[in-house]
Image 1 (spheres, rainbow, N blue to C red):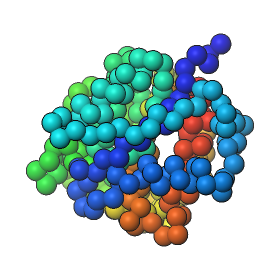
Image 2 (image 1 turned 30 degrees about the horizontal axis):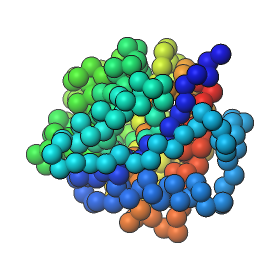
Image 3 (image 1 turned 180 degrees about the vertical axis):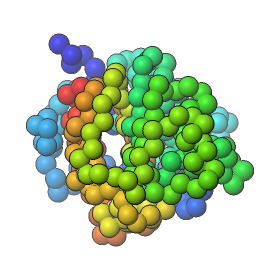
Image 4 (image 1 turned 30 degrees about the vertical axis):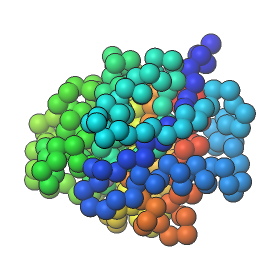
Length: 268
Ligand code: MN
Ligand code: MN
């Protein structure tokens, strides 16, 4: 039996660290609306039925206090859920939320790989004076030793500072300019997926603050998720900005990704 854990959908409606445009705080509601709209069924491609599945939970949304730093407001409840054997599929939020989520994960997973899909490597030491900006989470993750291995896919915005950071932290950064469709990754031990919607081409996902052409297709991302060869123990979907969406194209895609990630996590 490997089924004693549950997977919980957790809204993280927070975009204070969005460096360019606000909006991702509204994403959890919009994605949930699609999931419950009746426009898609509850069976995943990997043949997991989510409807009435006792291991698939909706944990609601986190709330943010003025007194606490956002790190505490995200990490502490995440630790509480993980200690109840609930693995998290979080809906951000700007990408800064991944750092506190991973802080929580590291307490439970002494071996942890991160698969990070994004147009950006998010390794800035600091961005516009904010070390917790949505351009910085993986610099904090690496400094704090929150993973054993960071694999990045979809990257197409490296500048000199970020190339130095890639080197400094030993990040496995796969740039789009060299990308071969169908590339497989060999993971040893648990995997956490951090999925920035802007890793996908804006033709498929226009609802993001930082549209960067030349990205992955929806199908490639779904296949990459399905083909993860190790337990997928946690995930976040971040940077969906409803203000930039066109006729719900991106919220529909995010809902589809929720289903496919949830199915993969439940089978892990
Ligand atoms: Mn990002
Ligand atoms: Mn990005």
